Image (cartoon, rainbow, N blue to C red; front, side, top):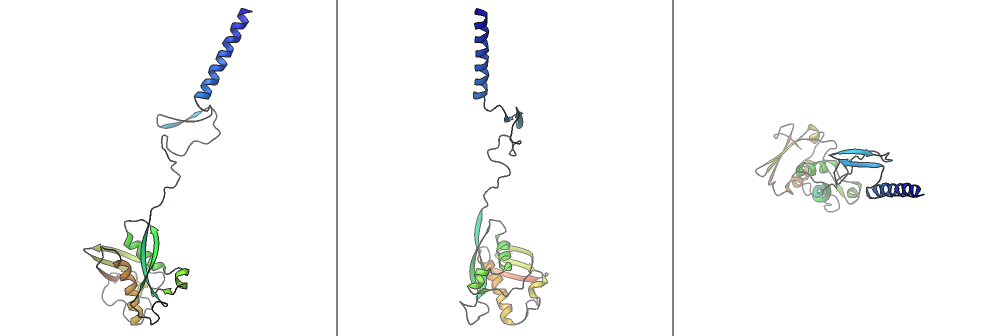
Length: 194
């Protein structure tokens, strides 16, 4: 009888120790970060984690995107019913923060006014499909080169003035820009003629 009690006692101690190890040691089935790598423990129901071992945030979770505000300048038939050609008005746009903020602002300008902005009287004199080929800002002068679409079938001194004003004012919002030189395919002479 003593032997049976001793064996039963040993079995109870073993069961308690194993249960304690499992309870205290964490889940039996799972992934454990060991020496910089994921090690399978038991038979985990979840797939191997996607974040690097020891990483506090998953790799595939997007980090918050920092945004910044720029202005683009358009003509407006409600603010300027006389159509003064070279008078343009700012519209605020929120863009992803970038070091190339001047180019990003011009890209917003080339995209044209949104439907909401059109409803408020804003319009652009710039042809659709215009591409920026190069933008440099040196010593306060922004030099921006566009493709030939900028002057495609552009006529009239009013429209030419409006195009120049939209581009110039969009770039001059930045404190590093005092002057704007517009070129088309590298040419600065005889472009945007009425």
